[in-house]
Image 1 (tube, rainbow, N blue to C red):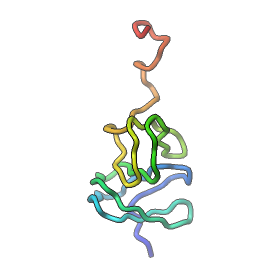
Image 2 (spheres, rainbow, N blue to C red):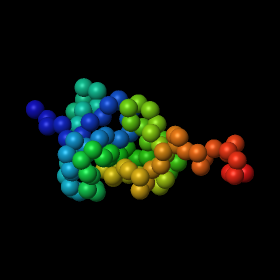
Image 3 (cartoon, rainbow, N blue to C red):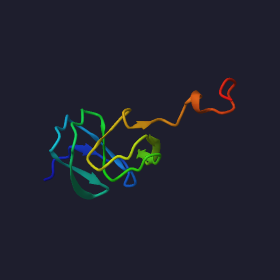
Image 4 (cartoon, one colour):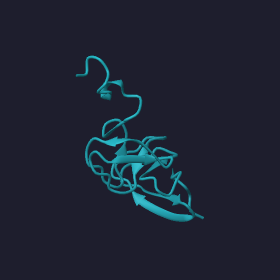
Length: 104
């Protein structure tokens, strides 16, 4: 039986959430749908944080829960930690609202 170390909610997600602290160099196991998969992480991934499953190009969507949760601020490679240092939310961002006074 494969021990699940990360969770992929929807098959189209490009990140998984780690269910434990994962040290760099560790090969983790997870399920995408009913398919068991594995990936070697190249950075420490803290408990509850995301790891990239596929390459995510700068400005591309980071997809979790089957929905975009933000955009990559740099190119992200499989196995890299995905968090506020390399992605930013695109929701609820008053600073991105071009109709807001003071942003013209």
